[in-house]
Image (cartoon, rainbow, N blue to C red; front, side):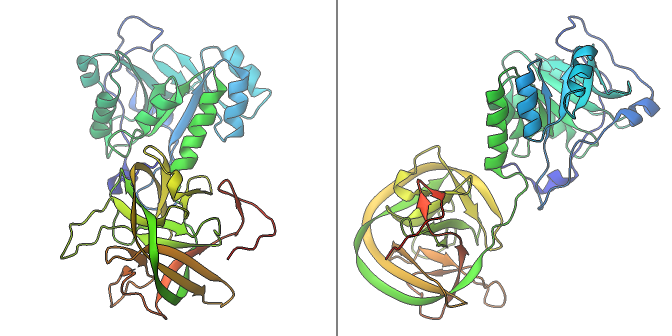
Length: 406
């Protein structure tokens, strides 16, 4: 998820000057309230991101299923929408939740303060009415009807950027939620998940975990090249992604199930004299090598397919989840690279294609300006970046067991 934009950190919205009724109400109503009430009602549901260009997304749950409520609370979502105050009070007595109550086109909190308005959008004309107002501020829940979702959601993201407040969209399943959270890359501020199946709660939480909304950092360490040997032919894997990579970014790859040390293999985003830049590609290594994927797991390069996800990491350890577009396996001459961590306790190794476009990420970024060293230029004593972790793996999951690999 993942969804990011440098301009999104200041993103919010102001209120609607006119709004449509909630789905339960057939006719149109203009929502009017005093500025002071709207200011009190406006609530900020978003938290600061842990890294630049990341926004915390809001999730409200709209359900009458107690199992859905339990699943949501267990995953950290405690704001629920109710059509009945009795149901909200009942659930509040059994779980620590933040109940909100729907009354026509409005949403109120437990103290009867208005926190949002609901607007139904089923036509271009109705979409035009959903516009920010520069005076009053309120949170908006939009129910997209009529079959169109992606383009209307993108229009809302564009219209409300740079304003104060929160815009959420009603989603009837986790797939719809993902559409709204990724519209125009940065997405809406959040979703109201209106479901009665706890699987949608689980899938949406898995989505957030995969997208790594908080943009956490992976610890990387320096390792010193100790051996560079040209070896024979092998089947190597080029991983073409559905995203563009920048200088300093690549995939974490290691030899086979010996996943104790993952090398940061650079993308082909750098310009060369002999071949065009391919910033979507990483010439990652042989078919038996491991690559880091979401969920703290690894996958054999040979197991990657179109539609699977991998982790892209930069020099500073910041990572994001990206989708694999295709995988290309070809026989090419290989080179064996070994490196020792600076403590001298561990030795790591990797096979890579012996070509100038294949490079390992270096820690250097100062006067030399180097972000990567081509494997054809590697020499003993060069320093590259690796990720240290546990050595034993079972089906890509790190396990604690006695293991010897050579």
